[in-house]
Image 1: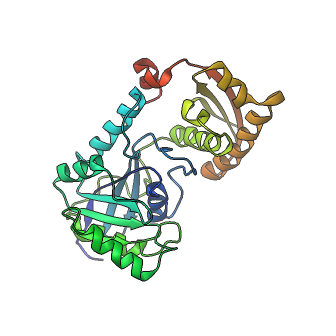
Image 2: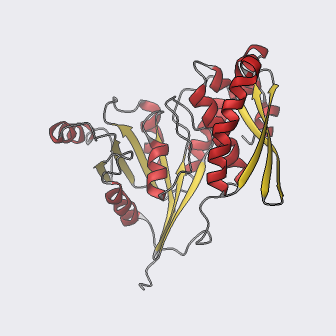
Image 3: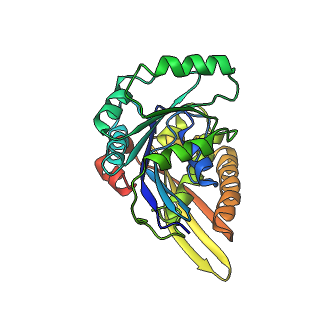
Length: 292
């Protein structure tokens, strides 16, 4: 075994719907970040730790870069900036079919002063000619250490991206235990799984007005009992979330329980309650309580 050990932090940044979270999950080889068809699903910075014999890559999946409208958005963008404070490499993700990121994204990359890898994602449906044209076009838009085309969903060239990341990481001892996958506790991922089902099942703006808080996590005789509150902004949202005769909340609970059992590798009893917390997205008190 080589004595050389690569170790460092990699910040993954991009606009919503660029496939950042799918990329993190593919790099790690398991699902850590929730994924939905809706933009701006990711709200927290999530560390995912990839351990090899001679390396440890600590990935930061961050919220998509947006122009803030609420205090919640401000907190989300703060987490993007904070992810660069300890980063050794920046991975800037764009989708093949989108225009180059807005100035806000470029400014983040310019301020980083670390090697920036431009990753063109979602190339599985593109032709080699169009990919080549895109790479040539984007190469003039910034000072990138590397440019690579991938498909996180189809796992195309993701190994190549990992090798580029390792190329630019320093030689350091591991920052975390080798068996650790993330810095987040189990309760965090349980809340994220529940929120993912809300985003998947409910339409329009309702999912963006919800937040999930796990109140109880207790093991009893081979069964894990979990109680969680789903917070909404308005009474009308509460009614839609519960559904006719409780049909929607039961559906959310059933789908979430199955994924939580897979995640915990244990039988789970899940109890969900819906609470109205008016204007929580603009309330510092609520945001602190929700971990922002």
